[in-house]
Image 1 (cartoon, rainbow, N blue to C red):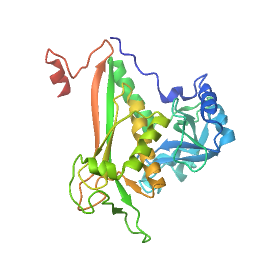
Image 2 (cartoon, rainbow, N blue to C red):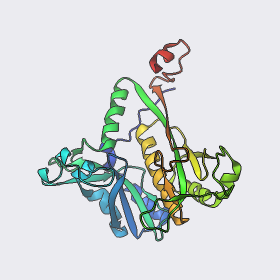
Image 3 (cartoon, rainbow, N blue to C red):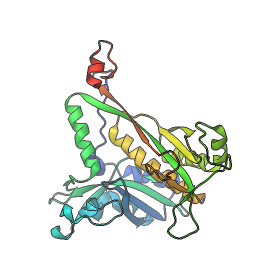
Image 4 (cartoon, helix red, strand yellow):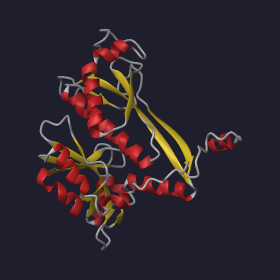
Length: 305
């Protein structure tokens, strides 16, 4: 089997013919009122803009201007002055281009809405600019290229754990756990009763995954009331797998909000209950075929160590 190196790279974001993606979207879903351009920052917080739906094509033609310093923010969105990429540099704009294959409808939105991932380039006098080194997606692309130079391709899958919580009615107070299935706090791992209790919101999440083409697999009830895990299928494309994880997290949050709930992926959102994890499965595929970590001659064990 010949494993092909994925051609999905940030540099390819504005390749000729990519506007066909816009035409296909309009045919399938009609014109959106709003386009949400999504740029994951260094902490995986989604930054971006709302753009009028009639300007959808311009995103591919002209790009989207966003300050380069977006990657110098902390988790709360405050400027980290030690990065020296804010006012010290004139806080100039970068130019962002769409990531192919990520133009999708937003089924939980209240009005016709599209979303698309973008990736940052630094203006350098060329039409597209050069990849901005602080964009995590650009960094991942460089790592993938280093593997490709050795004839290897990471094959990756993510599992995301999260809580569905009830927003507090008290301003500033944290969300509260929801005990729909049992009426009490207790561990109930893999309980079908907990899945049934949240069936409406979980089914809406799965339907949204289908609409957006996210490769969601199983859903399980985790170790605490209202805690769940959604698994994503593995992909021989680390950039695509990372995109899936970022967009799945946004989808879960958006659908939960429509149901009056708050989704939390925090490592320890509740002191008295189990924490959330994100499991990452990685294999190394060889271009000539086979899995470097699963060789019968024992070399796989050595490579894995």
